[in-house]
Length: 580
Image 1 (cartoon, one colour):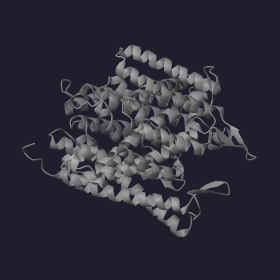
Image 2: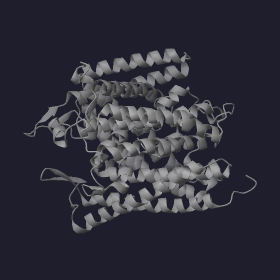
Image 3: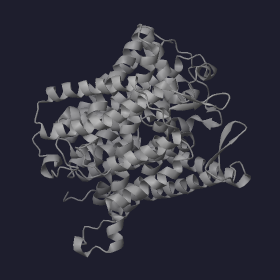
Image 4: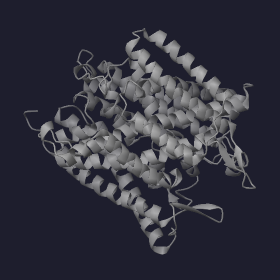
């Protein structure tokens, strides 16, 4: 098998899915180009901000296409390239793209409200409260995992054999460029809001900013250690998640979207030129390395196939920026299919290496490094300089994760605030405790502090729980949208199979994860030592304290998920009132 053939199959499937299935859903549900969208109806200059389709697409794609779209397929490749490819394509088309479109559609039709509000309206207040608590816990996991991934990408030093810290120019350049991006994003945000230039002029300015940031980053690498980056990134997320959406999130994602799309286009060109061989086995078995194909393939590959986090972006931020309902299809359905393409490229990249020993010998110890190394190998066939290409690919990967970070932190903050909001209580009657809990600064700081402690575990330890929680969130999003579509007399049958499939997958995965964590604590596999990880015989070992934190999260998330699913399914099976 050749990587080029895999790529061509993916392009044909994903393009046909958009033109046929995506447009079918738009016709079936009834997209109204003449309807006044929430971005105009509730425009407030902070969250509800009308934006051009390409700007919202940039925000959506940059937010959802996190490092998970790269990490998942590479980690799941132990099962072989065939099951990975099948789940990316089938999951991306019939699960992920449908979920993202349905979530955005339901949100736009409900004044840009989140999935939590949709659950309250169509399932009940108790279901909403439980869902918001679930979202908050999930957001903490995402922030913890992604901060560790970004900090690792920025880490300016690696420890050599003798214990000396050796500078890593590629990481230093990525760090510098990313910081310049943030400053440029603020400037671009002011230009987009107050400059009143046409979109082509804005695009030209954005591209010039992008090139300048990359050039300066390559010229002036910044060397800062991992722990310092953890703190600096959390400080950035704190500021970004409470700032007006037009000031940073919207223009930053607009800038990054060009970089991310350029990276995918370059990788496609590289595959066409290099025609890399596929050195992975087609299928490795139903049980590999202590994990079974079901359910772990389906929770390991989340972004790229189906990800519950996408529903939070679609209904939490992007839906509040849609100028015309026609934009929903390309922004949601289209962005998801492009992310599936990224996941296919990640699969081709890892498959191009002969073995894990080869990647280790090259110094590629993380999935993002393997991805960057594989794509770099493809592009050097065209004569491009290896060091520059490797730096640019790493920069793109960090942009994926960084753009997801402040989006999910904002969603986590909003979820925590909504937990304690009560529309029946007037603002002047809110007590001091409720006022504190609904304060956006308190909610953000609490979310980030808890995430910081989990960051110390390391993303690789968090990933199984993150994956299972993410896919359970997807099941809940399918459930909420299915109830909404049914209660508003729209067809919902296309959501039923994804709903019950993801529920079965995630409940199984969470139960197995809970059992593993509990047994590890009980039999001493996880050690009681200071800190959350410890190095034993050269390997990083999760401590019992770190495992205990994850166990609490896993039990809470499973319990909340079961209750919300039972409430939602009961509503789904009820006869629709004739008045609706």
